[in-house]
Length: 427
Image 1 (cartoon, rainbow, N blue to C red):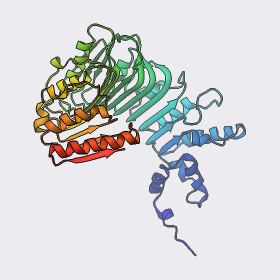
Image 2: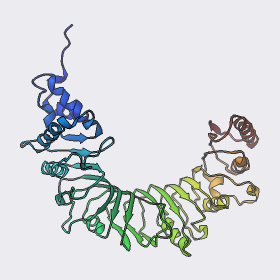
Image 3: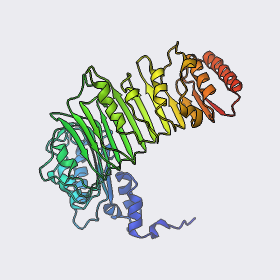
Image 4: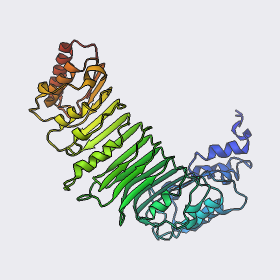
């Protein structure tokens, strides 16, 4: 039976685009299909090497592999690169055993006008070329460098960079040189990173839309730097840290979603300082908040007029139920509430003043890690959430016997509330 080869009739640019989605090993294997396919892999615009690329290689053919990569990246008359990526899920590219020319590969990608570079490397000493931080073609730069202390050159300038991500790295004051010379940056992330010998983290980027500052919660005591953010067009903000020395946040009128995880410290002013952080995001529409103590004084908080979604994780401090209800008084237009914290027996729910959002706007409540101590809290919400449409209860932490008892109690509460609502129970 003769099968027509329609794919081979496609123009070379389309075939190269298809090959760019394959692992490099599979792309090279297509060279045996026919004469037309023999050298197509060398013209792909996306080059990604991971541990799979080296799997099965012995010391004998390692030199052949290095020569292949050199020819693939450094050959003249090659097409412009869209993406160059090195990751080490299985092996390390620069552990000293293989003598790969990582710096040369990066320079070759830069010479080919690469738009995106993503490097996941264990050691970066003397590997990153200075030209990486002056490249005009780069649009996306993601660097995962375990324990590396970055020091940026004086002429750093990434004029077309829109996405900048760092992971598991250390930064001194030269980071501000980099940030201030990324004039069109839209997405910036520091994940599991740390700052040293620095008095201020100063982020002043009008074009920024997405910002992640995910630092080490294991720090003891307060931090010695102030966090300053002036990003009026920010849409998404994620912050994880212990309380800093201070916070100065400009008004974020476009902020849609924020995820705040913050831990208190032993300093006297930590509550006041932390409250300045939450005040800076008062225009947010969706807030995910995790705290380990009553770190935000509700009496000092602004009114969150735009907030319609709120997820609260209160860990390890007494009085979180009272704090929650006081906070709900600051969110008059809330429509969706998600709770994930252990309720303490003894809270006098019936004595609590009812927030206006329960009476007029709250439509959906989700309670995670439900236990039998929460029945009175559920009863309070059913009695006072006047337009509630949906109640989601997760019982994954209960035994079979506890599940059965809790379901019966919940069904009885829903029936007695005389509300037309949808009850969803997740086991």
